Image (cartoon, rainbow, N blue to C red; front, side):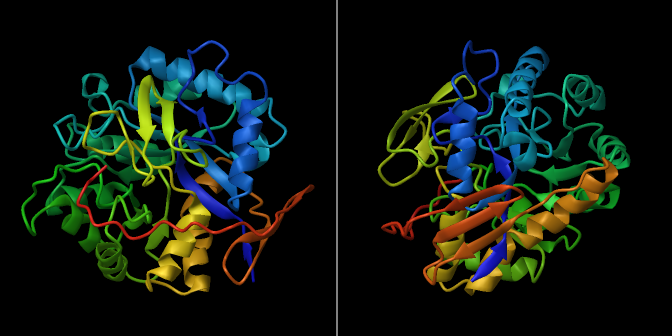
Length: 359
């Protein structure tokens, strides 16, 4: 079957390369970013928002500048990366909500920081994840929306009223819903239910069987309803790579044999090793969606969400075209002049995992 190219709005790194490595000498040398982009293409991803996570202002500037220069110099980068996702530093620093982000670098929403960062870049920040319970968040959301950006809720303790206020101000997405949360929450009055109940929000889900139990994911997708659920990976450098140690935003993370990524010795997850085509296959294997619906959740749904931000910045994005086998493995890809053919792989799907970890 055919589909448009897959769209991943949250990619922190891939194929051994950390997109947050700016400031590290030689981080993007030797064509490493093109190797990462080729690895992404092999999973069907033709459009992505490279994601930079919480850091101090100067470190964010260094990370964005290095990443932007590497993408601009890449043969594949300009076609695949229309802009960026800034996940933090406007997040809730409390334990559990912060996840692996450095809480000491978190701050109240400050749109002037976004403007400073963008002055360094040749492509815009298109998506910002924040915690709407922080002081000044509603004004920040309205200003970001007026500037043509998408705003998502994530790493947040926002309840029903704060979530509704954020949506009224212009927030349109839940970032990796069900994760970036403490293990102990009120059984019903909690950020998961608040965001599931808010029909103005789409929700991104990490379908790896690790971040969310497959049956819980099934219920959450049903709750959001048709057209309001999409797939993301939150991939880090350990994605499309063997088990072992990898760099991520000045940390060292470990990909275990089960695919889970953690800071060694920590319980909470630190991004994922998920590939987006595997997420599509997982939804089908778990009986959550048929092939066409699962592909749409990884392509048409995020593309539709992103479209207004692209238009606001005068950008267009060619998603390309993919040809899939009956087993939903990628066989052919076209993206403008780029064409790839892939052999049939030996499939190793992520099995459902019994756990309650929140990344």
